[in-house]
Length: 102
Image 1 (cartoon, helix red, strand yellow):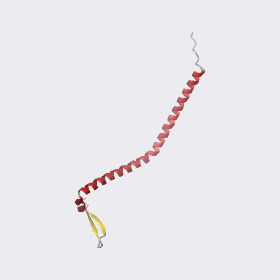
Image 2 (tube, helix red, strand yellow):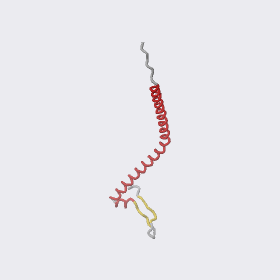
Image 3 (cartoon, rainbow, N blue to C red):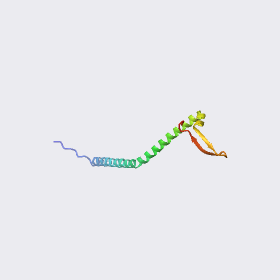
Image 4 (cartoon, rainbow, N blue to C red):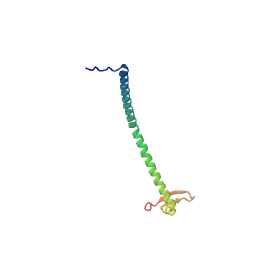
């Protein structure tokens, strides 16, 4: 019958040490995942509000640029769309738009 050789104290210590490190790595990983999930849940509404506002700004800016460019190329059309009413002293009293042409 063969007798099993007992592991040395160093081997037992090393095996226990590796197991302890592995457990701590798993625990720290779980804590990190939970922390990131909590932060993401708190920040998501703020990021969505910012993204909607930014998208609205970019769309409005692009539309304004396109309209300004088109009006700049065809300046006489602008004069047909808007009529200024002036007072006796030459001050602008009202800005009248032709909504049908617009």
